Length: 303
Ligand SMILES: [Zn+2]
Image 1: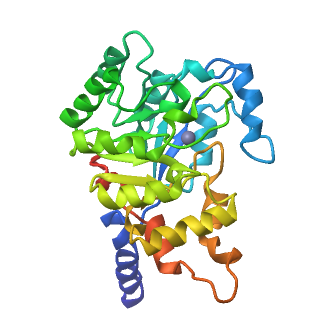
Image 2: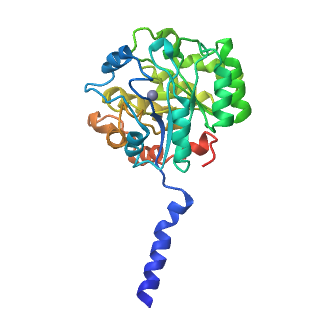
Image 3: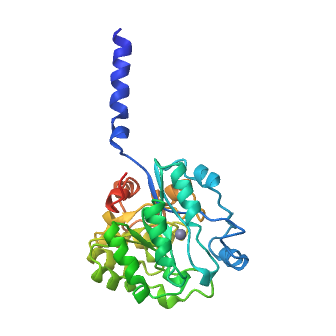
């Protein structure tokens, strides 16, 4: 009698953190797109510059689901940027979210160069239940303060939707660097102080700009996706983030299919490996805090 009772108590205790929701691994940056279909052949060709080895780019919901097995929650979106050869399939994302509402959090990708972009945003959020917006000024070819973007930001504030920006460099030749600088988001943050914003990839290679900006702007965060495979720059960026005191505003993400959860976790946990004997280190417990952050709560997304 006593044996089973003790076992039961133990199970209840050990499952307590899970029932409370934490620790939890939340991947705030993954992609769903099909090829052929959503990506042009030239985009696929140019995408070879991303990493040393070629990445499979036709991502079905089934492939995505397998890849995010280790995550408890996964933010998923396409990219709307015809200028760079990418179109977003927001309904594919919404269908996927509807099939796995306990885990998948879909964002709408929109491009102000497309006719009807506001209707698409309203439709995918109000009718299809998408929970945030993915914006790509450099890929799509617009300035973040473009007047066509003002109704998008106003809608996000009204509906409590976070906006995740790819604000940093990228590889397509046609994508204008002049729209890529992270500091271009500062005017957006000042005009819309309640807009929750995420700067993807620490705004690489302008990580320092992103770090000083998220320190100033209370509702601005940054994800650390797809950085570990440039280990020296990543180490320096994370030390800089520590020295400016913004590690608590960094979010875990993979940029799947560009990286996997497994290699991202290993790369982030080992970020100090390039440090010499007298160089600073980001403490392991600070790194674990990033990996266990309640990103959905920070972004105002109900769990
Ligand atoms: Zn991405």
